[in-house]
Length: 218
Ligand SMILES: Nc1ncnc2c1ncn2[C@@H]1O[C@H](COP(=O)(O)OP(=O)(O)O)[C@@H](O)[C@H]1O
Ligand SMILES: [Mg+2]
Image 1 (tube, rainbow, N blue to C red):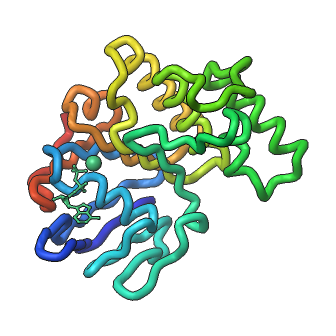
Image 2 (image 1 turned 90 degrees about the vertical axis):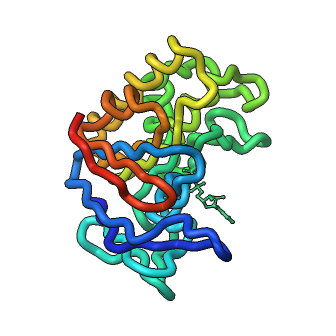
């Protein structure tokens, strides 16, 4: 379960997020839409613990993980993140990027998990490449595999299909949905494309200037 209660965050005079509340049941999905600058990325970063709220709380599986003045470290939240740009480590190979999230595991187990993810995301054979040797679509899939590697209970995706052509977007979306379902992860999916939102989630939350202006079931 992901819940945010009266969450607010401002940057100087900008109210990036203002009194936002919602809940996503365990294993369910919520899409967040809204124009550029409406606070979508801020919301995702607050849930991940990369930003701190000025007011309100973030709860994961019923436990408060963020409130003003206190915050659980991002790596202790069980959250997998896919950013708007793939943000791979340029000095690491595909395999090393994916293994990064598996540092705590015995190496045989990490290897087995890596193999499964490479097959799952269609990256087999590319494991020794560096990010600059990948196409845009391949880099996206590495970012997804890296996020999925530690089996996060919560998967947060920030416009993960930006800059992909229509066919690649479709393939990648199928992959994301199948992987999330397989992992039984609770999903928060940010996009500015309404048709994408409707495919991902049964509920779509709309943000405008940091405020929730509607939660619909398309
Ligand atoms: N680190 C920051 N410093 C100052 N302003 C920021 C920062 N991050 C975001 N903002 C502002 O907060 C608002 C919401 O931004 P953001 O959450 O990135 O929106 P979206 O992802 O919907 O495009 C915008 O007005 C943006 O300029
Ligand atoms: Mg954004």
